[in-house]
Structures are given as structure tokens and as C-alpha cells.
Length: 257
Length: 248
Image 1: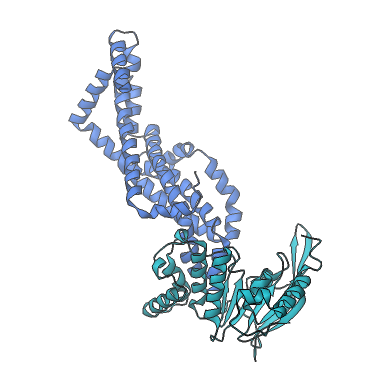
Image 2 (image 1 turned 60 degrees about the vertical axis):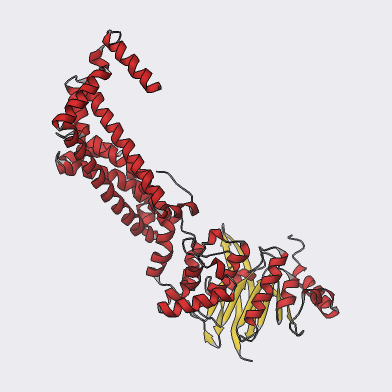
């Protein structure tokens, strides 16, 4: 399988009040096209920074990134990024927010309208299409953000704890929907989470980061799909994975937490 | 009711010379003067002048304030460079500029319009600039990720986001337009409500002063009512609910 994203010894050092903090330490990583990769770690381990670097919002201090072998240049239309925070425009309704990436790219009105209707239906928001972000529930906001990310049909989906702020039931629902959208799409997903079960349930491969931004464990998950939340909790293979991941992200971080 | 009592007491007190009618006049004299002005056209002529100055000053000041706010706010370096000067200019009571404007622009109507416009401009400009500076950087990032260029970021994120602030400034500035026009008239003029107040005062015509003040009060109340009406009719202001309101 060809590689979608390659990171070569990517480090990031933030300087705050004259104190240098190393957030990522020489992370090298190859992400295969079409795979679903989870970046797992506790808060502050640098996983969001890594995603920001891949998206081009933050420049790495050292190291390089390539997309399908080509050096990264930004902004790029083949990468969609759904941030942890909702960044829908408050003055636009759901339809116009979803259509915004198309408007920005100068897609014709007819095409954009049809595509938007399709996307809004895809995330099950038809009845809220003309509502404004402040009128939406947390789950609906996430659905709208997802639809907006998908609007320009990117090959790479970057998702930063997309369902982190939702209650357990809603999170499970949206996890299923994301998998449904991804399966057979051929798209590459990098999914940041701090939830081991969520990573096990969704990913083909889990990369655990420890505090200080080093890869602690790179674990392929070859269990068949569809998986169930129950299976993740009781299957002996998953339990073993869970323990290894728990140790990997916990090591060294216990002191800090 | 309270008003009726106050007017009655005032009338009785001045009629019996308990208080000096040359100092405080009497409701009857004020009413007499108002009716006289209304009949000979004085009232309408001077009111029209003041309204014209207020509206023109308000419109010019608002448009210029919004344009300047977005223009300067767009460039971080320029706005940082100009910041101390802006704050200094903002802090000057604009009234103090009136004598200078008399020298520059004469004592005609343009001087009052410019004084009103400058007063309005600073309030609107400052609010717009604050709005531009408070645009959520994550929204700008989101636009950038979509591949938006500078112009698209300006028109699709910065302007809509800061518009609520700018409009709040416009709303606050409306009474200041009237103040600017009146101050200009008080300082140097031969027409307008401010002139009526000043000329009546200089002739010890207290009935005239009170009559002119009454007209001014009615104008101010009508102006506020008009703003409230427009506000209730326009959905534009609803944008504000998503941004914190900030005063002048």
C-alpha cells in the first residue's frame, strides 16, 4: 500500500516565557493510504500539535513532512481537518457553513448546492439545514463540522478528538457514522484521541505517544470489522492491546497527572 | 402626573415672584414662545438645520469609522504603530476641537457636520477596530485550511465577525452626532437649535432658552425612538448576540 503521509524526525519546541518546552521529539511515521490511524495519548502529549503540523497550521521546529512522496506545501485541498473546537461561522446557517469550502474554491452555485444537500443528508442534518450554529446541540455541531470537512472531498481526514466533548451514547453513535462514511471510501484517517477504547474500536493502527512527544508504541489492530463496543471490552486480544496501550501512554506521565 | 405638579408649582412660583421669572421663566412664557416660533417658522427652520447636521455627520462619521476600523485593523503592524495615537485622539473631548474647526471650516453648516462626524467617527472606529482584533483566530485558521486567500478571509470571516461590534459602535454614536451638531452651533453659528439656545441666553431671554431646550429634548427623544424602531425592525443587530457588547 502506498504512503499518504510521511513524517521524518519531526520535532516541535515551543518557547513560552523564555522556557523551551519540547512537545514532539523526532517523530518519524509513515501512514499508509486508505488506513485508519489513531494517535493516542494523554492530554499534553503533543498529539494535537502533531495534527496541526500535518495540517500546516504549525510549522515543525525540525523535520519534514511529505504527502505521497512530495514535500508538503500549504494550504492543500487534499487534507481536511476537523478541529476539536467548533469553528463553524456563527453568522451562517448549517447549509452555508457546509458549503463554505466550496464557495471559497469558486465551485459553481448549482454544483455547490447539490453537493451541500448531499453532505447535509449524509450527516443526517436535513432538518437543521437552515439553523444557525448557536441553535444546534453539541452532536449536531460535530455533524456539521464533519460535513464541512468532507465538502471538498479530501483524501486525508485529520480529526482531533472529534467526539471528545459528547456524552457516551452520542459519541458511540457518531463513531459508527464516521466508520460508515470511511469504509469503502479509500480515504486516509488520522484520528486523535485520549480514549483507548475509542482507538481500539475504530483504528487499523494505534500510535501511542508518551508525554514529551515520543512514540511509545505502534500497534497494528487487525481485528475484523465491524467491531462492537462490547467486543472491545471483553475480547481477550483487545484486553491485551488495552493493557499494552495503557502502559505505553501512562509510562512517565503518572508523575505529571 | 409628576410633570404636571412640577409645571404647576413652577407656574405659581414664578407668577407670585417667589422665584425670579427673569432667571427661570415660567411655563406659560415658554409655551407662548414655542407657539410664536412655531407660527413664524423659526422652530421648523432651526430644527431642520440641526437635524440635517446630525444626520449628515452621523452618516459620514459611521461610514468613515467602519472603513478606517477595518482598514487599519487588517494590518497588525499598522494598528500596533498607530495604537498610542489612536488612544490619545480617542481620549480628547471632541468638543475641544470646535474652535479649530471654526478656523478651518468657517462657521457654516459644514463645520457642524464635520464636528458631529468626527465625534461619531472615533466611537465607530474604535469599536470596529476592537471587533477586528477580537475575531476568533480559529475561524481564520478554518478559512485558511479551506484554502481561502486574504480577501476571502477578510470578507467571509473578519468582516462578518466584527460587524456586530461595528454596529454596536454605530448605535452608541447616534446621540453623539446630535451633541456634536449642537456644540458646533453653540460655539459659532447663526442657525440651528444650538444657536437658538445661545442667542436666547445672551439676550437674557430665559423663556427662549427653555423653549429651545424643550425642542432639543423632543429631538433627542425622537432620535432614540427612531433607533429603537430600526433596531427592532432589523435582524442585522441579532448578530450582536454572539459577540460581547462593548461600550465607547
